[in-house]
Image 1 (cartoon, rainbow, N blue to C red):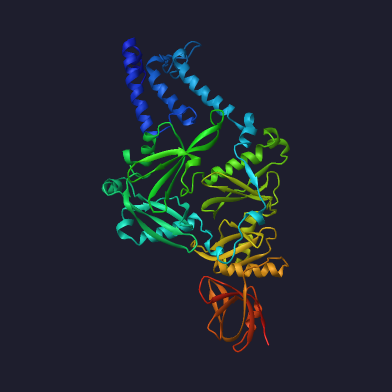
Image 2 (tube, rainbow, N blue to C red; image 1 turned 90 degrees about the vertical axis):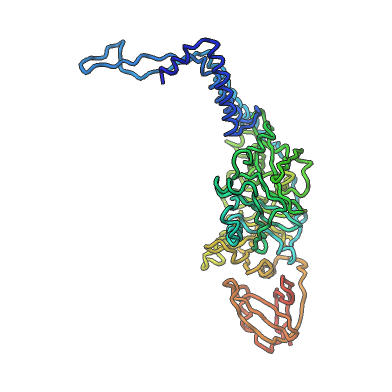
Length: 561
């Protein structure tokens, strides 16, 4: 190696210039093609790339010098001037200055972009509107409770994989993307995931025909379906060379800093990748926020870039949930300055460690709780909602249990079954802030639904469906003397024609058939007195309508004369 470098530096000045131009340019192109850094000084990745490229351009001019290697014989003793040592390499300091300059830019850029110097600028990145929960959050009735997306991505992946597995001509060549995007499709929540090539050789064998479709999972009905594209798509993350999605985007937009790439479909089912482009809001690298959106058509390779405010309404995810949470944490931690965030913590708040989804006003919103940055009492001081498309924030000051405490309460309600609660969503039931979540078995399948009161998480109701859980929950609210107003309940008086007790999802459900053919149902777990009802009894019931016509859910009942 030493002799090779020695020959390199024995070349004349002209030879070294030519070698520098050839070697530097080749390495610049190769590194750019492989790592795809943005050519943008506001990206740390750009400066690291520039540092590597400069090294290869300057290598012929660094003129290293080697210290001698002294090899002593078996009887020789080292003296002060001749000691056994390894070769040491030193550089031409002037040629190394550009490399040092790039390192200085990275270090100073990171330091001067930090919260230490610009804490209040970090805090001012977002504006949070405060609202009254019972007034601003739409109330959830029996009809709306059945249209809430509660399924997490793990459960969606199980359903999606099963659907793909039933398609032998597809599963042998393709696999599903690991990421499921929460979208609002025709005013219903859905999770979508596109197919990917199952390795290099599958891409090589199928690149002419492209990727044929995607999987759409209904998180409300726990159903999934495979949907074929009208035109197969070419550009995906699992493709190679020029058809690799990241490479295609970088070649089209070499200066943009890509923050996230999500797969979505528009209202006509046409596929797009939504590419969020970021820029710093603080100095050189700090407080990265979304400034532009690229709509990329993976079938044709055509794309369009626009400001966030001009993004079409059908787009659901511009800001990721992680970014939305991080931006709120900047505001919660640094509104009082950096020192206050470290020492005093006066007024410092932080979002909880996960987030859920809400579909509201034809948009997808992230939901997460807010707690004190210094307290460890497992309670929230409120909630935030963040619009995944526009980045708008709302804060609801509702004191109560944090999400993980509510999940534990739901699991405790059916602890003998060993079900696990998913991260909850938030609903307004008769003015009461309420967590709603699913309980899953070991296989990841949804078995029950649970509702937990935020302010009093000892009020917990479960049911085989959202409607059943809602009915049990409103009954518990009444028993706790909480005014729930008009629930939309109806009443009826009838003679019992038949009574049956049927286990539904391990819940003892009482089905009462009336003399007019209608069926009323209740739950022994919530009302043990139902066991006293016999054929021929006359009952007066308060009930709500459910998902199945003429199968009605009992809120309250009594024997009638």
